[in-house]
Length: 242
Image (tube, rainbow, N blue to C red; front, top):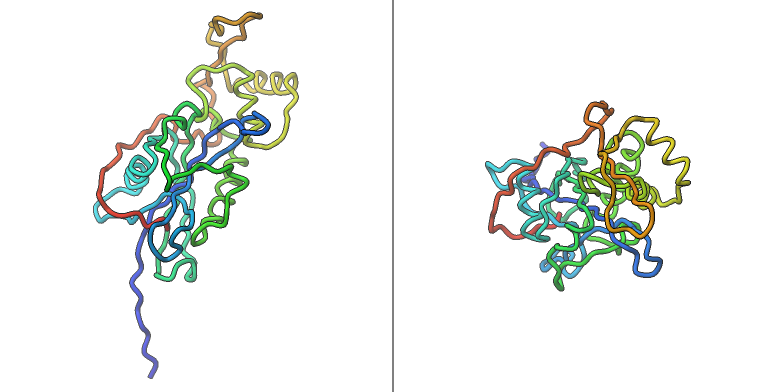
């Protein structure tokens, strides 16, 4: 008779946070993510995504929010569930991670907590990470770049009003390629995705560029939770980073 040993399964919530920051060498806007250094085994001293255990009675999104606020000081307006990662061999313990991804504007990212155990890395150049977090980052990048083609997700990196140059810069940074300004202008205006606000940028020495906003009347295939902000739930539990 074969005896099957049951292993307890734990749930964790991790988050990939994308922000646009200038590249220190080229000065061009690029995608960056914050990582936390693990202070315990397994993978002690190795970088990992911000994360923590799911507390009984706590909402998944609230768990992601409070972990982000506690570890990075960020409260992103765009927070979306990405995927569940549950490979049997992803952790010495049986841990299933519900992964969220968040997008924050550069001005908010500049206010993030900075310390020896928290560091920002270019999203395409992250070091070897704990667990399967490299795979998670790669999947999140793939998802973000695909959503740029059919949703208003770029708005999460911008304010309520923006110039066409601002919007094009977001697309170039995420997609990692230059975009012809004239073609971009024609395509985005033809799509009716954005509308002029009737105002312009002030204080410029040249002809002031127009300010635009996303057209709320246009239905997108995937609008995303840009108007939803979950209230963070505070906790004193230790980070799992799984």
